[in-house]
Image (cartoon, rainbow, N blue to C red; front, side, top):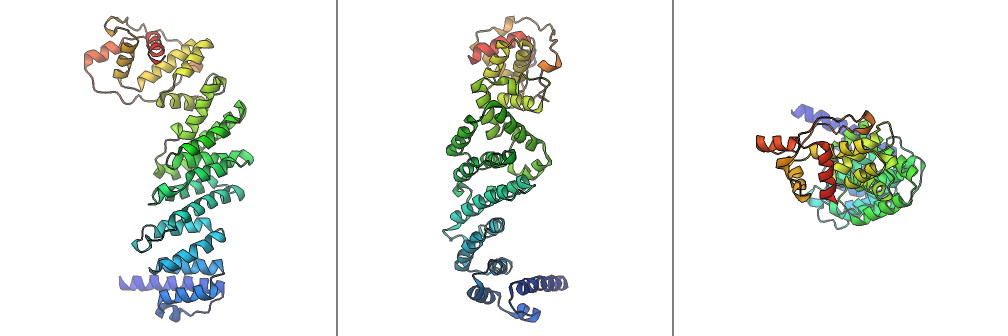
Length: 371
């Protein structure tokens, strides 16, 4: 074990010697191994604090060798931020925020905000092809930070939402920040204002781009964030606007069935906001689709929900006719919601009684109870 530790220490020293040579600091391997690391770090700071690479080297030494000097750290981070080493600073903050010796640094929340907002802007300015994976990695660090609630997500969202670029990258990034970080009404208002200014086609393009991300391999990186991208806040805002404007041709009534239609239906059902969509189907003569939507709505909820809605609609379940099974809607008028979930353990008699309700009566119950 000691031999392994010695080899690891030797290779670490070799890496530092390369860094010393890069920034022009003379140092031998024997001198580095024998020196007091806190004293060396402070001496390099005195002579080289104007050089961002040297400051980064000092910071690495402080973390690798547990140099307990909050004042030195507090002096270095502004230098690193000024050098636009935002991603590096996020990593440093992730480490020192969990170290008791640095917990008293009052500027840590400000450093977090500067590093995260600076990095997000840097991503959209450098045309990084992996910008979303990189953004999610940083947001994952934010989620586990003890300073999470001090991170000003509103300023970040507003800053990104005001910018225009190819493929809506700044706005998509703003949506991701809004979806991942704790909810904030001001952030929601900023995105709502941006969505309101879009025409239906542009909003549809944005939704498609958000859904493409939800389907991509990048989501694997985001698994730690515990975000259900199908019912993410930004998508819900966009679908709310479609309901408000009545542009359901965009997200529901346009054949053939698309990813957007499936996402729209799932979102409306999960958020219990299906009424406007069902009404739109009825008004446009899409009666079979309306039946399918309501059937799916009740299939993913407890049977008690249907019973309670029937009570509000003043429908007596004891006298309902049996479903004749005649549902011949074509494929374009049905939406597969997957395996039902959330069904409670109720009596067999109650289950049989509810199962007799035909879709046409379910639609009537739904409309009357949700009106």
